[in-house]
Amino acid sequence: METITIKPSDNNNKQRVLLSLSSSKVRNIGYIQDHTFYTVRNPEKHLHRKSNSLGMNYKLLNLGGQYFEFISIQYGFSTLETSREYFLKNGSFLHFEKAGYEKQLFLSLDKFGMNKVREFDRKQVEILKDKLEGYKNSVSKLQTQLNIFS
Image 1 (tube, rainbow, N blue to C red):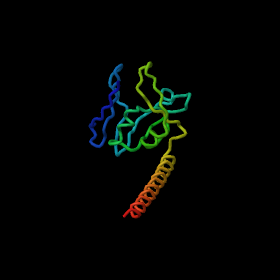
Image 2: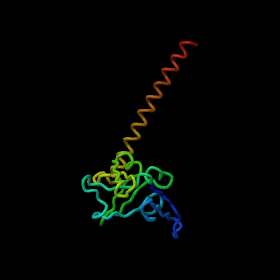
Image 3: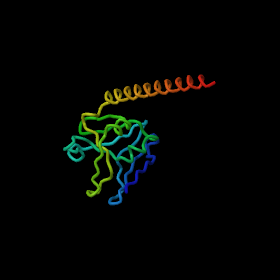
Image 4: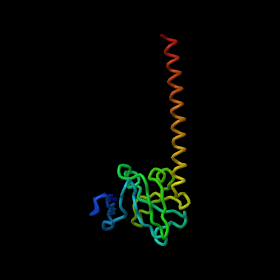
């Protein structure tokens, strides 16, 4: 079972993110600063070639909302950016428990980019607006029915 620990670092505005697996020592997997989780991924070591994706600890993504909103990954000579919410909604689960890894969510390299996050957020707002309109219509119908019986 893994444990995620978020600790203040020597630099007051950064928080270190530590991962502890039962089979290994504690590893520093990145840091949080200004609502962004920063980490480094090596293309040779971290790319899941079959799905052309990068993985992140599911527990960190799921519970990290109170600490960070965005993700910035130094990947080779480039920086990949996304949001925590987008990663959660668009990632795919892969779990290599027998190899000693924790449950991870993988996001395809072609899904990274803040332009994709903005489009995702725009669609989420439209979905919420449609739901709100549906609720308003339901309330209006109920009010009409109540007026009939009054």
